[in-house]
Image (cartoon, rainbow, N blue to C red; front, side):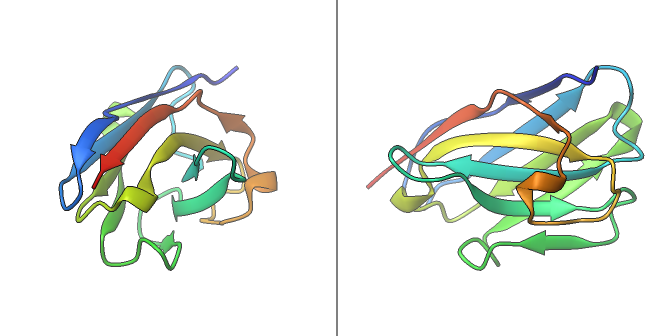
Length: 124
């Protein structure tokens, strides 16, 4: 059973940056597509970014394009989300997820494993 653990969340002022990490226990992440999702209080979970198994294809929600970058380092079985120019509306619990499909996708139903999430709070 894969276990995903997120880290790197915190409190930051608007305009600041954070880098989230998502690490797996065995098995390694190398054959999985990975995604980041977020959920703000009182709102539904929404797609943020996804990367395919070998890192050469990425997808982003329109709201984060040009500000967020998803990447992966298979040698350490970790996926990252670099978040720049953060806005108060980026506040939420950010969760990573792994998909056996190997292809980047915004559809949460195609993800098989989920982490518990890390809190990101952006103050104005």
